Image 1 (cartoon, protein in one colour):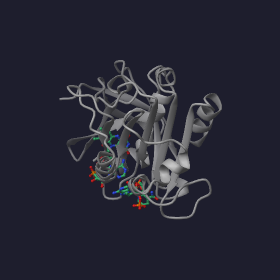
Image 2 (cartoon, rainbow, N blue to C red; image 1 turned 45 degrees about the horizontal axis):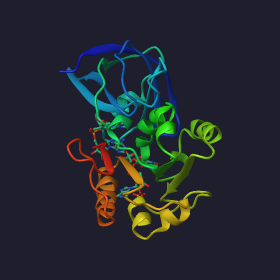
Image 3 (cartoon, rainbow, N blue to C red; image 1 turned 45 degrees about the vertical axis):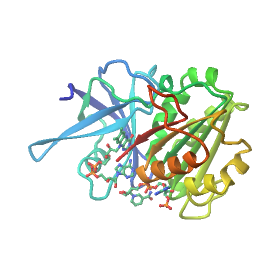
Length: 247
Ligand SMILES: Cc1cc2nc3c(=O)[nH]c(=O)nc-3n(C[C@H](O)[C@H](O)[C@H](O)COP(=O)(O)OP(=O)(O)OC[C@H]3O[C@@H](n4cnc5c(N)ncnc54)[C@H](O)[C@@H]3O)c2cc1C
Ligand SMILES: NC(=O)c1ccc[n+]([C@@H]2O[C@H](COP(=O)([O-])OP(=O)(O)OC[C@H]3O[C@@H](n4cnc5c(N)ncnc54)[C@H](OP(=O)(O)O)[C@@H]3O)[C@@H](O)[C@H]2O)c1
């Protein structure tokens, strides 16, 4: 059972018709960047709870969640409809191991996301550890439409702050979009397009890879990386692929 406490909605920012960010205030326990919490609402007399990654770095006192309204989903349409002043239940304690302390040292860190899974990376990138530990950090965000590329302000701030270290590459799959790559992440790795475009080589000796979001993207990307010599990163046996599935 989660240890539920109330959270007050400070803002609910709608980026487009589906994507939204909730800023919440609640007295939660300390968490690590990359972890997730649970949000819950009572719907028709039943408690409905789902996992959501923190977007804010742990040092921020406000909690931020980035989510999409799943058309026929149970909880996300309700969260999408919350207004400032409303209350949602939140788990006081964070969960998850998609955190930097689980990633072995290497030269380059590749952070690959679909859709809302950019969230945990924004939390990690706004802490100092990642910039001390990796010479280059590559942030890849794959979305359907360019209007789904949220958090450009925060990403541009990071690019200004770490111009020598950070490389950001969006993918937009369902329309042509300037500065974005077309298609999907796994294919772009398989045919070498991503490495050519970024200008870095993906190699197990120098690259750690984080995969987050759509489970099919995670599965297909992992399979291709395995053909290139990468292995899953386990606590008992260090590897180079660390994953988080959103469903
Ligand atoms: C560890 C973890 C962290 C998560 N963090 C986030 C997060 O930060 N933001 C977020 O929006 N969701 C996140 N999710 C997914 C979230 O928990 C819910 O599944 C989602 O909000 C849908 O809930 P629902 O009740 O509306 O739909 P449900 O009735 O539970 O429907 C689930 C279906 O919705 C689709 N779906 C679920 N999540 C997404 C998504 N993020 N993007 C696109 N399609 C999706 C899939 O087709 C899935 O089968 C996370 C899940 C896990 C396991
Ligand atoms: N984003 C929108 O405009 C939109 C519109 C209507 C509804 N929705 C809601 O949002 C949900 C979908 O959200 P989303 O667009 O954030 O997530 P998504 O469907 O996971 O798509 C995000 C990115 O992941 C790619 N992708 C999908 N399957 C993949 C795979 N097997 N391997 C590699 N890449 C893969 C998609 O490419 P492809 O484009 O090639 O699939 C897209 O570029 C739906 O459930 C729906 O409720 C969103």
